[in-house]
Length: 587
Image (cartoon, rainbow, N blue to C red; front, side, top):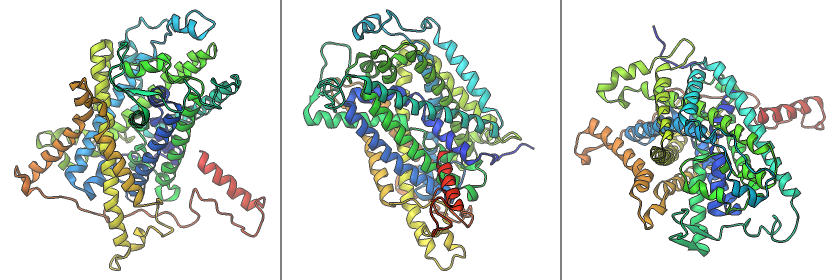
């Protein structure tokens, strides 16, 4: 008999790195330059700080609910439980589609990164010591790289889950070390430049200014720039536009919750709590520092940064970090960085297939989430191997990677770029529902903690030492995340409303909203009939099934507590506690 459950074999360090590795694809290395070009170096940092604050809130909401109830498919289960089943299932399908498209987006990025080539005229202008810089692989068909990529991610995702987790841990460690080195690299480059007014960080003068001079609403290579917004309105709109770009780089932080069904020893190791906190700290600090240090060495009006806004496909030559090496006349480093970017995009694609398969497997376990004609398919997708791998859902997600073959021709590639833009909106809708469901969860748990008829009411007490993950600043953080994500959904592409109106870009930016409400309406028609006035909210508000998790009594992980408070820090037991605290946060 085939199994229908996942295997809880992943440990804390593996879960931490699976989530971290998922976030570090090509977004940071290529999109950070786009953010700097739009807003300027200073406002780009502000944009990443704001994006980090929203991520901080969403991760807190999702992490606390998942730590108390580690259910499969937490991304849609909690909206279904605390808002409405139709809302939850719609969010689940949007998230699954988003992850499936990201597989092809990473494949497309890999295929384009192999077209590494700088223009000879640009090299002469910046004084590069060589007349040409490139790999000579531009002539290869993108289909070759897409095929290799799909074979690679397919093989790794059918590995036993424990082996997959170990590989992801190795990938994550490599990424942390590389990004840390990249930050140091850019600091050294900046320090080696001449300290003089007009060309260094001390004044942050043009073209390294804190903010860009203006915002070109519809950037192009044409001499006629069209609508250009200057002054304070231009800076504000530049910041907002940059913020929406930042969010594409942050997508994947919800991976912590998606691994809940495969985590082992949740009570002992507090995996969800520690994973959520570490992810927030690591991603926020590394993204902000990378953007800040990169902006010190490359002018925001560099033509290769402008190309990121104009073209739908990007290469290593469009990365601000590669440009920094070229402008400082360094050999070898541009090729090394581009090679790493290919590795990063490939490993992120591996993780995207993992997330897509686990989300679809969680949906397959709920018959109500599927139309009646697809119930037989649902039952097949629910099966797993003896090692806990859901082969059916892995194969479905892998097939979506075939969309990357659109990269073979220019126009289909543009269409694929628009589909990818829609993915960000889909995830923002899901994050909105998560924050909204937490507001209901918060009050429901508070009421349960005061209900004397519940035998285990202490399990719902957020101030109890055994409560698995109490996030601070609630429910303010949930409302902050809810409002911010809602605004990003509505105004994610405000430029589409400025003439000349582009119908295709408008549809790509807002079709996700229509799809969400269409799916919600379809579920209500299925359960309540065609009359919308008779539709009923169906939210169980269930907090007893499955039973809430509580942590093992004793010292909580992630907190520095000295056993011998009356002894100095170098006391053997105190020093051991300090080392253990540092190791918990580093591993």
